[in-house]
Length: 196
Image (cartoon, rainbow, N blue to C red; front, top):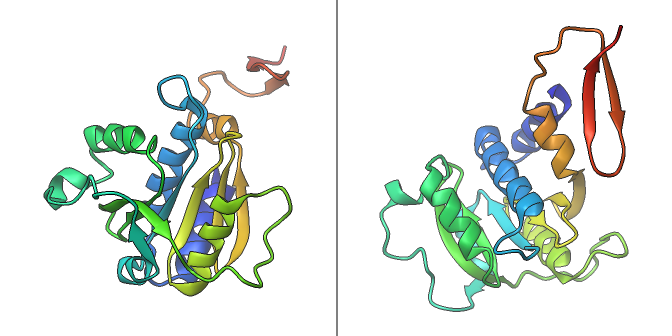
């Protein structure tokens, strides 16, 4: 979907420390978590992308960091086993710190940036406020997985996008049906069929 790529490229361009390909990898991982959950449970978490030093300076480990001591090559988001490990670690409380190069640097971080004066929409909780605050205080972008299965993108202290997982996943797959296509949806399923 062209609009999705444009948005991610625009956010990445505004933040010199954020690579759009890495941001897309993180959003895709977040969408998978929002859609699938883990072990039958809904999962909520935060991924910060870029400005690793700034995020570390405004956060602290909640427990011993499960990613510490592992080589950079095994912490890359483009590795399927790393993605599955991150999904397991998302069951723990705290945020993930992802480098601009797509490496999971740290997990289970308590984001402690000043949240005063933020204009976060009503109904969004402390996870979203923490994510917005860290993006205002650093050069990072935050991707928030809500337990309500919505993924939100925060930049410079504000909400810049809401991603519905099913639409994101659908946009990544092309239909083999030749145009024209009729799309029908209900709350359970979307069906693409050829118009006669």
